[in-house]
Image 1 (cartoon, rainbow, N blue to C red):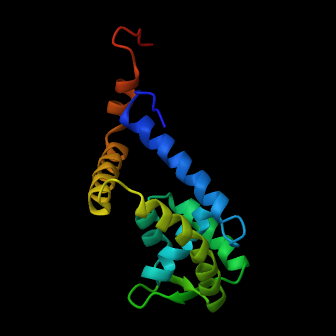
Image 2 (cartoon, helix red, strand yellow):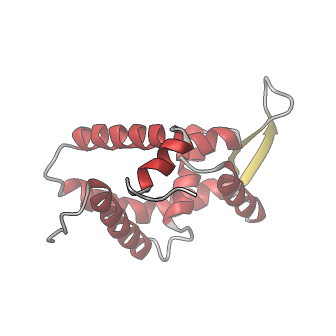
Length: 161
């Protein structure tokens, strides 16, 4: 497919949109949306975790992670336990029902993952390195002082109030 040569971030946006669409189509009967599956999978692979740890792994605001955890709790898919070293913290893991939901959705996810990975013209390790570099740079930009961000968006000859 031809791309408009606008910017790297535009390319990333378009690719993300295409991936979201193909995953949504593939997972429509899985019981979980692709974004939910990613959250479930994090707990499946790395849990138990605190909500703060989940937010860090997922690159999401804590409030967004808490929204996912709330819906997972309502579905009976998450178990809360006291953190072994921090009495104020709660660790989260998937319940048996949550693990079943993750596995059911995984069958749908895997179809798309295999289809995409088997047809990549670039080694997966190279793509992962590039994505990690982009993620690190995005995180650095997010943490940059706001004044620099605001100045970057202003035309040079803009009149300041």
